[in-house]
Image 1 (tube, rainbow, N blue to C red):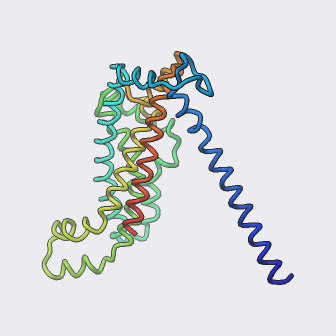
Image 2: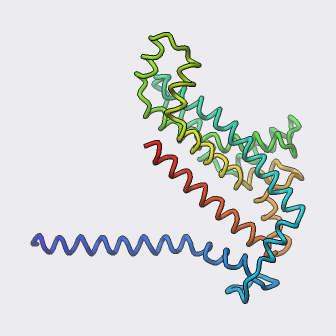
Image 3: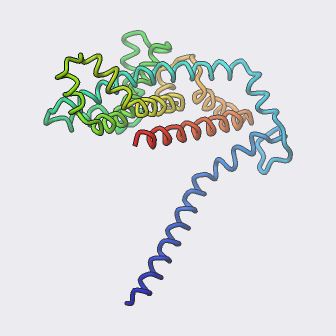
Length: 266
């Protein structure tokens, strides 16, 4: 086979790979291409393609006190749990990387176990524990449950960030008399700040979208994913397309910010 034949074969392979990647991406985006136009539909029921353009379902969403309460709860729970997850996960990641323990791999696997265990199992376990301690149906229980789910994502991001930071800089600062607090505040934090923000955002999105664990431990407290699930069980309300579109936009912006922060870190 000549070099020219190899070059043609490589170009064909690249084109085929590009076409295949585009088809996979189109398949993943297909639900978005359906849901968002339906949220602006003038029809009284779910109908695609929409017969006309209207903001009626967004007006219905923002004028409904139940939806607004669920949205407020979701934001509060996500903000608090992601902040707690950031503190706990960042400290755990630093300890794992700097400990030098030969069992660090096992410990790291233990910390990210919630990513492997099915959410239903986590939900049942939290339901039993919270039932004993009286945290079922409380904001505190929901925040703890979401924190448990968000910590592994923070650890995954922060372990990479801490490993990429040269430990010799900390050693030099310590040898010159700087305390651990000073090293953390003036040396570590400025260098890993993009990773901290990215980890917090990752944890926030994880908490905001969580429905399975929320279903087990929330009691009567509504959140956006839980209310969407309840609405689909009772009836197919077109208002769901409006909130789904907002969640898609919110998640897309979040992922874009996450990618931007990680690129800035690099």
